Every structure is written in structure tokens, then in C-alpha cells.
Length: 241
Image (cartoon, rainbow, N blue to C red):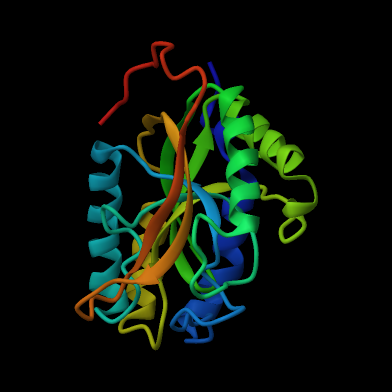
């Protein structure tokens, strides 16, 4: 059995230590609407299952109680996601039939075909300079192996990003001043460690991102392609909820 200390990625602790004083002093990073060559580009991502998404959304609302209502509600069910890899600077109007997107789709299909479903534990909340994040710990090596397999399958198309060292789901992206910065930091500190919630993701998507309709402050993934992991028929361990 892994101990809690063995399971925790120390990068989450470092993020909190770096971000807490910035957020407390209203000096954190602020997101803006998606714009060409900016953030929110075409990406490869996974969605948490419904039961896990409900937990994430409940944490999002608790964070927004302290941060204020105008920030991006990235943890909404239907919006929450685990980014595997960003693929390019944002390109408006990107479609799944574009030549570069067809290359991404072929690479995603090859990498997913040889990968078992990805299993994680949701272990707590941390703070980054521009967001509140739910921290995830892989249960086994499959998520890291998939990340490497995807990079290899993409080849030159992987040049935009050089890999990640943590798995997470953003709950809130800050877009302006924080209503109660001290209260937000205190709430995150009180949720740094929670009883682990285990879940599995059976598929992976190629997506673009758009603003939510009707003025809802959220960024919504739009699916260009979806691949089921090749070992998805293998029985998964039950989720804890």
C-alpha cells in the first residue's frame, strides 16, 4: 500500500506555497477571453466521470463563494477536464477536418489503442497563481505512459508543449479581483488533503475551447474526436464516491 506521502506529488505543495501570497495580495494571474494565439488552444483531454464531476463542481462553488461570482467556472460538470497536452497556440475556427487536426487524430488513435483506461485518485485542492486546482494522483503508470505514447505518436506535431509533471482539474480560473482572498486561501489550505476519491476515465478527446453561451462565465470543451482506450473492456477497479 502507498502511504499518503508516497502518493502526493510535491509539486502541488510548491504551487500552493508560491501562489498563496500572490493571491492574498491580489497579485495573481488573471485570465482573459480566448483570443487568437492565446490560451485555450486545441488540446487532448479526458473528462472525469459523472460522480467525480459532481464532487469537483461542489468544490468549485465553495471556492467561488470566496473568490466571487465573475471568475471562470472551469469546474462545472461538462466543462471540467484533465488536460493531457496542448497542441498549438489558439487558432480560431479550428475544425476536425483541418490537415493538422487529422494528424492529431491519427496520433491520438494510435496512442489510445495501446493504453489501458487511466485511473486516478482525487486527493485534494491546491492553489496556482491563476486558478484553484483539484489535484490528481495516478493510481499506476498508465497516465504517464499514455502521455509519452501520445508525444511519440505526434512526432513533430508535439512541438508546442514539452510535457507536464502533474495531473489536475482546474476548478476556477481567476478573471479579476478576488472578493475574499484571505478566505479563499484559508479554504484551499483546509482542503489540501481529502480522503482519496478513485475514478477511471475510459476515453480521451481532441477538443477546442469556446466561451459558454448566454453569458455564463465558463470555457466549454468542444469535441473534435474521441477515442476509447484500447483496454477499456478490461474490468476497472470500483470508484469511491
